[in-house]
Length: 244
Length: 244
Image (cartoon, rainbow over all chains, first blue to last red; front, side, top):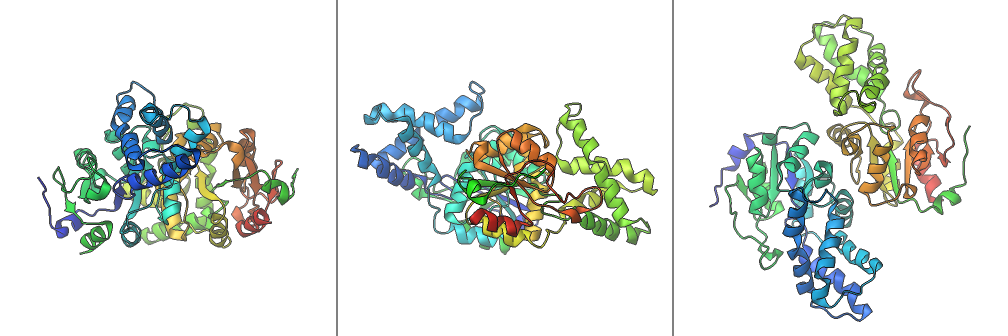
């Protein structure tokens, strides 16, 4: 079910900061990880299906997150989680013998992803009116590298490293609002995933859904699975909707 | 004593990130707090010496920091520390009757400070070659507002809020390097205060001293009180020295 309020209603809520999910919502992790992994593995004589490799890698995500969110394992930054996830899929691709250095280089693939085309112009426009920050499970260095690569000017990098926990745990959203001295109701979480928006709404944030069916099979959501305040077709469209 | 290595020696250490102290080093807190406080107090009929008020306020800083650094009080963001410091000096200025709202507005003065003239062009130039971030005792929202006001594009806001402790405690410097996946030796702390640089060097960071005698009587240091890797006369001069 999608519940769309008028943009006038959203404006009346005086949103001051926009928080963004990053993987899937702003950057195309799937073709990026496929491309980067292939560029590392192919010259070494390893032939893998690049998209299948990317999907298998990201497929470990929820289980790896839950290990930490549950408290069974202590918080570590996403770069280290990505490396653990990578190790767990190597046997499936006959890559058990990769060196530590190669694992590090592969893990760094996640720092070299491209933003969807609407993201940079959309964020530039939104930044004129709102504080903007990623509230991602990605660590600060990873977010900083993605911002550099794509030319994004964040006001701050918030999210998992600040809260030392992972979305959708409430602490991640609450720490982001608090970092800007705002109450959750002054903030809007913008994401392509219903689970993210449901958790943000539960602690009182406004929410915007941006569909990214192109994120990949089994990952992309075409429609908001939860009630949201705004549905925008892109980050540029979000800028239009929040200005009118 | 000032120990200045050649810039070639600094280059050979492969510094990848520059970390900046903010109050005094990048922004003129003294005349800014004086100006902003006067603009709030004078229309209310309160006549105080603005610079004396700013000096008295900042004069509470080390004692307030030590209360938290020592572990006697839990970590709170600098905005809250500034408010506590403010309350402690009110009797001295006959201002005990100020409302909570006025105290909040006065505390927000610290968000409306101007950078020294060399800062913005210097940081823009340094950013072409290095990751740059504030490593300040200021909280994230405070740093974000100062960056907005002055047009500074940080790669991330590191420092006290991330470490949940205050400089010169080692955790603040270590958490900053770790946020960028760097070892301390890949990072350079840039500051106008010897105590800051001493602590950064103690955990293995490179150091740059920028004199700011104009910070104010009792605050500004004309010479590095500790050995440092680079002495620069301004942030623009630092850019020149780190490029040659």
